[in-house]
Amino acid sequence: MKAGILGLSLAGKSTLFQLLTGAAAAAPGGRPEARVGVARVPDPRVFRLAQIFRPKKTTLATVEYADVPGVAKGEGGALVDLPALRGVDALVHVVRAFESETAPHPEGSVDPLRDARMLELEFILADLSTVERRLERLEANIKKATRAEDVQEKAVFLRLKEALEAEKPLRELGLDDAERRRLRGYALLSEKPLLVVANLGEEGVRDAAGFLERSGLAAFATKPRVALCAVSAPIEAEMAELPPEDARAFREDLGLAEPGLDRVIRTSYELLGLVSFLTAGEDECRAWTIARGTRAHAAAGAIHSDIERGFIRAEVVAFDDLLAAGSLAACRERGTLRLEGKDYEVKDGDVINFRFNV
Image 1 (cartoon, rainbow, N blue to C red):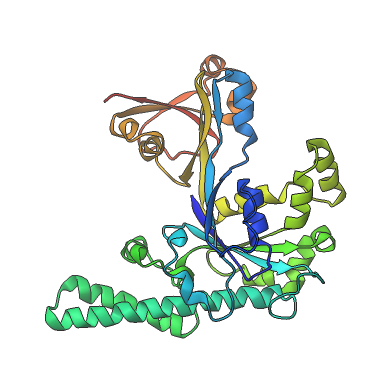
Image 2: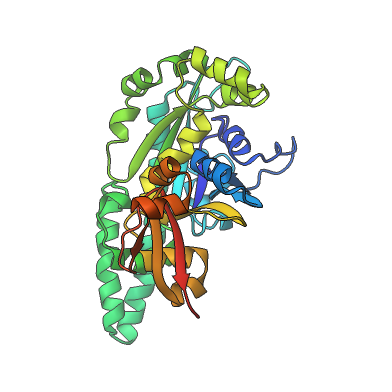
């Protein structure tokens, strides 16, 4: 999974990127450039498996994040050609929801709903420019030679243009898989699933749910393929410097059930419909990310194409059943370890050993 982190200047998106990926702060005074880093997906199940199997290596799933320089009103077109945003699965828009006398908001006041709408409009305008250019090319091609493929694509792009001119993001159009594949090479920003992250101050984070409702962000996030979560990047940065026990006590004092960074990643997974299956053995215990509804045959390919090509059967046990039994041998005795064929739909937390032959 790859996601692009965007936002207005001084929203705290680079701080969030650094906390998620462990990247160093950008050099002060340098030219703003996109940066890419990798975050490990928190999954305590992997470490519980490691206690059972004592592997040589323990590996968490990962998310690749691209931190994009701050965007100002009217600059959305510059995002279209950014290499860092090519191929991203989702966009993460960090909206500022904290006051600061030393770092005033570029728009003069803190209004996270206004900022969310502003960047959404920038996406729409950037996409409209891309769609209009493509329609011009298609019309020229059709005049030279009327190919069915060009005619079909023109019909799709006319539909996109109509939506964008009505200031409607493309993710709301309900495009089917074939249409999405057709559009994959155009980097249409408003078609991407969107996670809005409200970056709160300490007082705001104590009543995050209430703030999201009052600010209008909760209503904004009811749109198709939009999700919302709240963090406080400054507080997360402070907790990152504390010993684990102290950080836990600090979090409890603020009424937070989990680290904000975990919440960002978990919400990203939910938005994209992703789950994790697990593999376990003496060599390695590991989490693998797949789309919800993936069949066993395709899930095997997440590990290696040879396993998918030579797939025979999948030995599957639910994580909770394995934990309760204490070993795979005990699962066999209890009947909770079962053989599944290539059409089995892999569930979140399945522990799988693939049998294959190539």
